[in-house]
Structure formats: structure tokens, C-alpha cells
Length: 325
Image 1 (cartoon, rainbow, N blue to C red):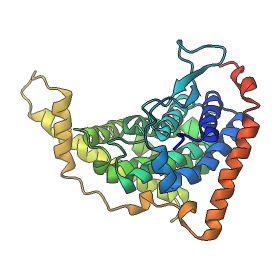
Image 2 (image 1 turned 120 degrees about the vertical axis):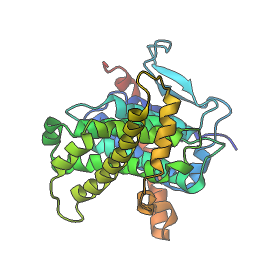
Image 3 (image 1 turned 120 degrees about the horizontal axis):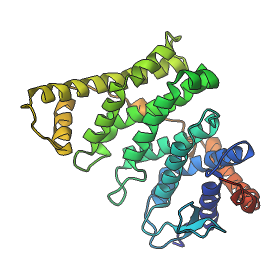
């Protein structure tokens, strides 16, 4: 009844600072906070509360916007938005802004795990107040960028096949989830077609083929084998859509103009030729909050740890804020 719990509001604020320029200990702090938040996102009851829009701004987030006070770097957030949406936007922004050779792989994994739980929550309960708690176009875009980045020989070699492949699996699994279950999660006109078109664009650039070459012939059941299966799904989806669009373009009179809406209509038609597998495994995970009593106690302990983590992190915020960009 009192709105967002203060410790959670402050934790989102701390996380926004930590994710601005994460490396070393800062990245470790951010990862621990995300792991502590997982039980809240996994539990359908608490996730439903976090997915409800706030009537007023109840917390602040770090921002480099020019309008923000440069001394604090904080701006009001949350008015009219759900805390889960604010958290998701922070994670997508972090994923988008920190792709570099010295990639914080473990932190990327933690962020993708939280976002996966958000999608799984909406797959289970549908829209909350008519909206999703994550921007699907932004999330799909960053996952496609991450796969493209990881497919580079230099990055794959620098990170190592297992670490790069594990991260690529998390990103490609998210895209597979959206492809298989996206029709029920993207109610807006051409929302699903637009998602599939972006997958097809990356397919046309031969990114998925390059990833399959890097994976080679993995042992059955390994991380790289699972990655191969997900990338093959993305590749086959892209090929069907690209073939349908090309056939339509070939049939147009020379010089005839067309709109983006025309293309999305063609993509939607091409999708009728696509037979996607039933993949409930894409939204299944070990949910600590809904399992046996011992696991529920562990979830409670992790939530208590969140409070402890906050009391630690809040003291380092001024030093972190003072770090150069």
C-alpha cells in the first residue's frame, strides 16, 4: 500500500550508478545485486507488484542527460512507469552501451537472466495494465547486436569459445523465446512481424552462418550444441522471411514505391510458411520462489542479502559517481 519499498527503490538507484561504467569491483557489485533481485522477478506475486505502474516518482536513477544535475547525476524516475520496466530499461541500456573486447561476461549473463525472467513472467500472465515490462524492440535489437559482436573472430578468440558461446546462447535463447511466443506478447500491429524482420536482416548479413562456423561440431548436450540449435532456428526463420520479401520485390513493377507497412505485411504473409517448434523449455527455469520450502528459505535469505548489499553499496555511491565516464 505504501508504494515501492524504500530498500528496493534505493537498490535500483544504486544499480543505475554501478551499471554506468562497470568494471572490476563495480561490475561484481552490480552482478551481486542482480542475482539478489532474481527471486523477486521469478516470484509471480512480487513480479506482478513490480510490473504495476507507479502513480508518482518514488526513486531516482543515474543519467548522463544534459538536463540532469551534473553534481548528483540523478533524475526522478518511475512516475507512470512500472519499477520492472525501469529496471529492464536500465539493463538493456547497459547491454547496449558496454560491448567491448574486455566484455564483462558474468555481468552480461546476470542482466540477461533477469530480462529472461521478465519475458517468462509476461508469457505466463500476459500484459499488465496493457503493457510489457520491457521494450521488446530494444531487447531484440541488443541481443542481435550482441550475437553479431560475439561472431567476430577477435572477440570469440579473446573471450574463449565456452564463455563467448555461453553468452551467445543466452542472447539467442532470448530471441528464440520471442520468435516462438512473441505473437501473444506483441499485440501492436506488425509488432511481431517487425521483430522477425530484424532477425531476417541480421540473417541476410550472414551473422548466423558465421556463428555456426565458429560453433563447428560440438558434443551433444553441451553449451555450444545448444547454441547451434538456437542459431539454426534464427537462421531458418530469417531465410523464410528473406525469401518471401525477395519474391515480392521481384514481382513489383520497376520503380514502384512501397512503404514500411507494405514490407511488414509481406513479412507477416511469409511467416505463414514458417513452422516454429513448440518450445516451452524457452520459458522454463529453476524458480526458487515456487519450489520446495528449503528453496523458499534460500530465496528469503537472498532477499535479506539484498538489504545487506544495499547498506554496503550506498556508502560507495559518491565515489562511483565521481568516476570519469
